[in-house]
Length: 185
Image 1 (cartoon, rainbow, N blue to C red):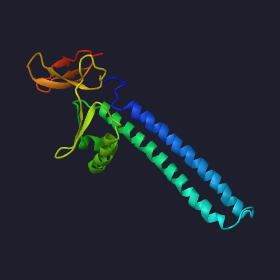
Image 2 (image 1 turned 90 degrees about the horizontal axis):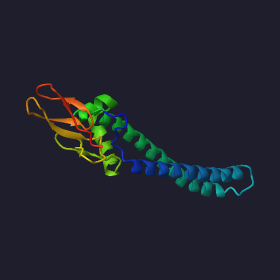
Image 3 (image 1 turned 135 degrees about the horizontal axis):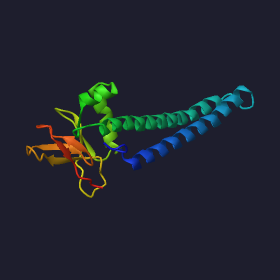
Image 4 (image 1 turned 180 degrees about the horizontal axis):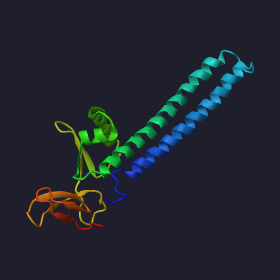
């Protein structure tokens, strides 16, 4: 496994990170401005009936702050899942594997993963739901930049087919022989 193996969609991660920062900045500025109005009411510099208006105007600011925090949280969760995917040995990350590594129930994991996949956080992998929920890491293609994927290799000793990570070495699942995947960069 290469140190830079990732399944994150960097464009989406960057876009959502910028969006979260903008939401936080605007929400904090709005609430600062309207809290100054509330303080002006308490200080006697503004009519008392303005307090309800100022507090009502703070609600959208709090909502923007909450959205910014949630976007940052989801990006952080996507990075944790990505670390689990990058450590996988066979190209299929099962619910139990993720549950063990993240200390979560598989039901919660797949609710969260479904949101992340729907929003496009990941590339070169797919979410398989149903009877055996798992994440399938897609195959790498020669000449493709998706070096994080897996390749179907035939064992030179026994002829069995084994999936191993591109640009790496693996063992045959049947006879234990070492198989070298070709470099696809």
